[in-house]
Length: 76
Image 1: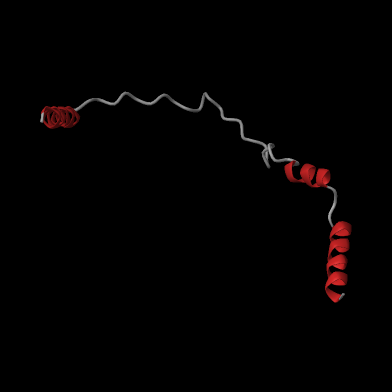
Image 2: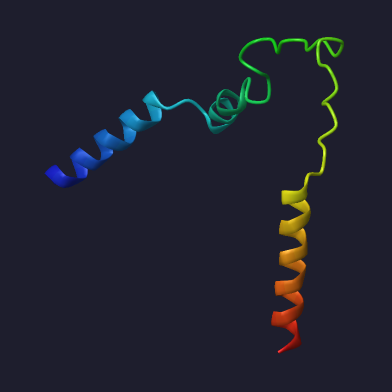
């Protein structure tokens, strides 16, 4: 009997303490897809284009060695 009273008291308090499912649903997703602060505006004029990168001998040598190693490995 104590067990039944205990369970009914817990069930009753749970109903009084918890709001409806719809209220929980709305509260859970309220403001989820809005940024917490305003996003800064990026001035596109401030960004300068990247300078061209020269292809020096070291890069050409690495590419040539890589191609040769791949052809040798695939030839097996």
